[in-house]
Length: 462
View 1 (cartoon, helix red, strand yellow):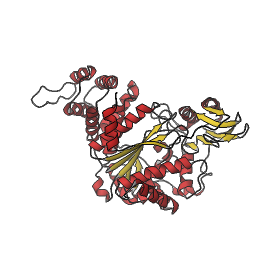
View 2: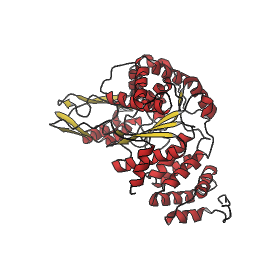
View 3: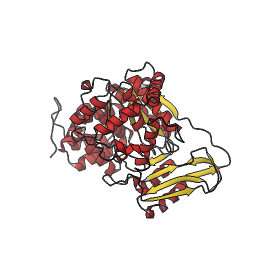
């Protein structure tokens, strides 16, 4: 039986009553939300009741107040990082996910090089999006599963650590997230917001920068849904005492020129070493913009523009790369693997797909390209499945480029040759050509601060 808790002068709380209340569209108060989260964390509420409540929440939606209460209750359901021990303001970045989205490997060390602490808790690939931890796992010896004490130690030493969620950190979210995946209740703004923010707020952040994707490769493909989520996350985090900003960024094509695991790490290392961008200026630019906001919100630059310049300086003089190497070494990774990036990449099967038409690359279904990467062996359909560190794709033509039929378009790396046919078919179905160049889409289309987020939510009709 679920644990009961007395609700002040009222009757003891019963989970079935809260299911009915949510089902009928009546709001839950902070105590009721806390009761559910406590039961999830302690596994004292049966799975079927948690599942029923999630479905009721998904069908009726969570209010802004309920979303805030859920995020804070989940934040407090386990251990938390005491960022006061770090000696620097703690700032993090979170992306809603995309294809080739590798900014963490640039943003985190650049921001750390400019005076903020970056305690970054990341995830693994699921669906069409890649996973930060899977990419880091391509580095021999790298450990992302650190204890909270180890996590703190690495951040104090290097200014940054990128880790997985620990068993004691936000245990309620681990239970509820797994249930959402199995019960078809993932795509709800309130549940998404509370899940993301509970983990970020548990890291004791002073500030948070959100990268909310829009376009064909975004998790939320409708722009209005992505905008609502961005505004909701900013307002919720701000109400919990964390300065937050959200950048709406373009995912109408893969970010950078690679999508996979090791090859994304290698692409970032090239840039950190001061390499000239090759078909990945969007990756470099977005990373500097995100880092600039982190540096600004962390109090190390009076404006995000000056934060951008500071990050660009850390990229140019190599201090960002130095921090990156220190972090990899502190987390057990073999930094000698970066001596020869090509030698470290050992795919079992490779094919160069040539352009099948002449014209401008006018459109990409980026989500479909993400599924092509997954089918090559770089991603997973279900949690826990293994991924191939060497699988992925490297593009030779970007959106808006003019190509001739027969020119190299993309190189595919797979776990074995039998896995190439489906990704090739998916790529051909996802890319369109035209006689005229397409209109350019801005890399950042909108920025939500606390004021603009609260204004947006007041006017939003959901």
